[in-house]
Length: 78
Image (cartoon, rainbow, N blue to C red):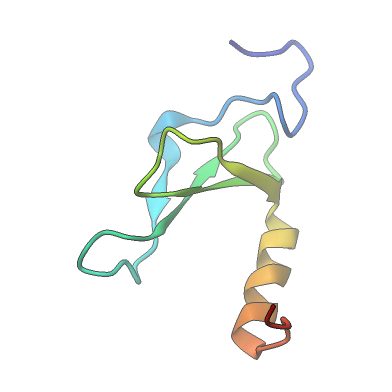
């Protein structure tokens, strides 16, 4: 059900918009990205093995920055 004024956490994700990474392993273990049609600057991310679980949501810019940090090795290991 859509909210009359959806925000990042209540906006519906277009079920037909999920796209799987082209780097998917042979076992299908990967992430998928989905669109929030009412918030064009937002993106949803989910685990392809558990698509029924809640998706992580954020701005496209935040996802880009996270991806760049991972690729550059700027994230500290725990």
